[in-house]
Length: 417
Image (tube, rainbow, N blue to C red; front, top):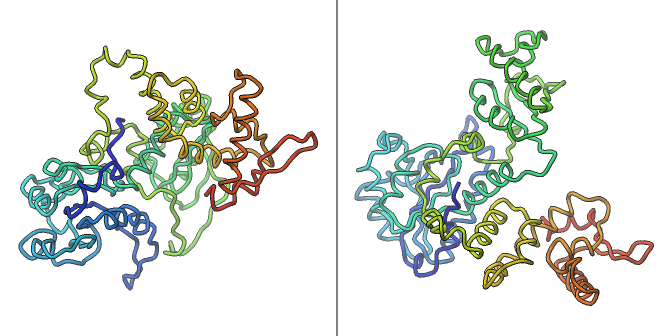
């Protein structure tokens, strides 16, 4: 999937005093008294909203749950938008109250677009739906870019699957095997371990001849479940099912927990499907239209490799490319070095226990190279030590006097999280 342009790429001229139509996902769970029981999605939308406010935008929020303004189009809404001050925020009425939203009606899309100058999609959880507010409006507002949450979800999910560390394990949960078949089959070609949980486990257990009592089973999908087990075995994938379950008389609101707010969009992306709400956004770079001859150029090939490394979070490849950057490419890579070093040390701190040699970190993070002279390696090591200390890392010495990063302490520090 091509990298999409993010809101952070827009300058002050794009945002100051401009109406910015922001599609957010505020579809939060409510209890019987309409109290919010999990505000994860609201908090996840805050960085994009705050960024736009700080840059003087007139922020027009569009979602599909809450009731705020009396409508999302019409004279009253246009009046409220006109009265917005720079840095102000207006939350529109539930966009799905209009049947035209889910039909992706062009006229409805135009009315939504007429409220703003710029489009930002931060509703990754709805990106798999080609609706007026997720796909249609992007045809009439330029620039159309991804919000911080959208970009974060794309970077993580695409990177995790495109360039996974081995062994690669995936956990998929859900009530029915039938609704997860696409993502399960896609993951079987990539993972070493696949853990299946939730209600679907009972269908898989019954397919293998186990008794599941009165638990929910998709009787017409037993053959499908059997084929999944056989495919996993054929591909050498360890298919794990829970051995214990928790039973209760209700699914309590306070028992609700999530890692990703993506929902169906996450599953469709992992399945390999294209998401209309993402495709509608502007490309971050013109790579898609580069002629094949241009892509053979040494500097261009290097730049494309760097882009892939940054998108997937592959810090090892990034710093290998950093050391071999041709022409002015290294100047451009310098803009990403701090961020990639931060990510790399954060990952190393969580992966190694209890310590890891600073000399290894210096080499991996591009401070020094084994091919360099002793003096240069020494300077690189000193720079690495200085950088780690400046960022709050805990350093110790082993019995041989070699500097070590205490990963247990460092991984729990505020810097690395």
